[in-house]
Image (cartoon, rainbow, N blue to C red; front, side):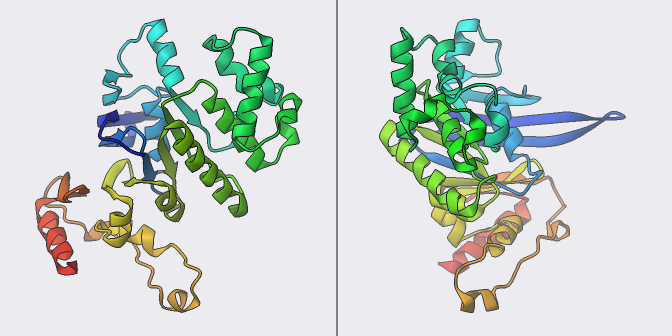
Length: 313
């Protein structure tokens, strides 16, 4: 259940990478958004849009080029003391895209999940450590007996459940889910998303859910931000974004989603995004076209989009 309390504030965040000969790749270019305690904020876009780089910069895997990331009011990219760094690492965790490469193949499941417990000294003895890990395994739908096995003995979906248990071990407040289902079979994806929703309800978690599959993001997210070439081009409540997409890039993403309806599929018109059709008379800005619905656009496009929305009412 989301609240009005901001847990994360991203302000004008930029992350550039050197590309040789004095050039830079603007992976994340001046994005801003807030995440409220208890909600799931979806961040979507195709490969190369900058969404995963944004997530990794927020959690300090990358240093920000410019801008601020405020977690519970504190700038995470400021110089932190060792104690503050440990506290931040405990309160914000990440679930990675590929469960195969994110789990150490030489460690047992017990040691993988308990690593955070050990670092943060959250258990007093070996008995408490084992009990905590076994409780976490059951919480993510695995068996206690799995604790003594190694990652290669599990399926992709089971490995991702281990990754979720590892993130939960230190009792974080915010979890960044970096494309957590993209490496899984379609039949397993819904199971993992349902598990994340269940855990959120039980433990009061907040998620930043990063993905390229808009249909799955709609299912889990309260609000959605759409990224393209480092920019956030649209942000709205989940239902609003699906019913009233405004930016041409968002429309193209939505038009590509297939539905299990033969009649719809026969008549589905795929909208191709053509950036040359955008207004280039001025630098676009992030503007609120109606309450809680933001679009990156110029003044001319802003007026056009407002008329477009009024025509739908």
